Length: 146
Image 1 (spheres, rainbow, N blue to C red):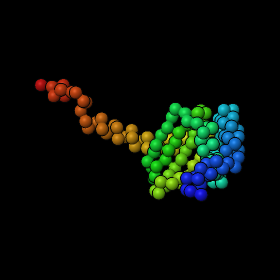
Image 2 (cartoon, rainbow, N blue to C red):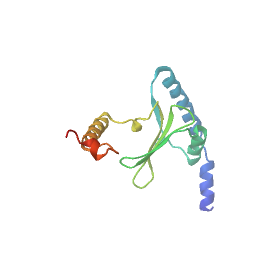
Image 3 (cartoon, rainbow, N blue to C red):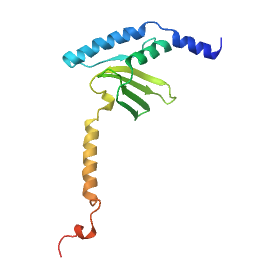
Image 4 (cartoon, one colour):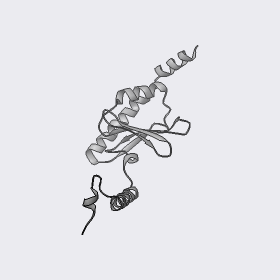
C-alpha cells in the first residue's frame, strides 16, 4: 500500500474517543455554566487516532478567537464554536505537538497576563511617559517661563 493509502486509512480509523471526549467536554461546560468551575481534557495522553482527532476538530469547529504565542516554543489557542471551549496546542522545538488540551474556561490561563508582568508593564509605561515629550508638541509649547 502506498504512503497515501496508509495516511488515508489513518484518517478513517476512529475508535470512538472523539465522542467520549465530546461527552466529557459537554459535562465540563455545564459545570462551568452552573458553578463557574473550569476543567480540561488532556488530549495528548489519550490514544487518539488521526481520525479521532480530525472528527473532534470538525465537531468542535472554530470560533471567532485565535491566538499564537511564542513563549518557550509556539502555542496555538482557539475558541471552538462553543463559547468557553478552547483548544490549546503547544509545539516542541521540532514543531511536533508537545501538549494538547481542550480547556473549558472563560479564558485559557496561557492568555491571562501574569500580575508581575502587568506591574512591570505599568512601570515601563510610566518611565516612557516621563522621559519622552508628547508627540506633536512644538518646541515653544515645551518651554515654560520667559
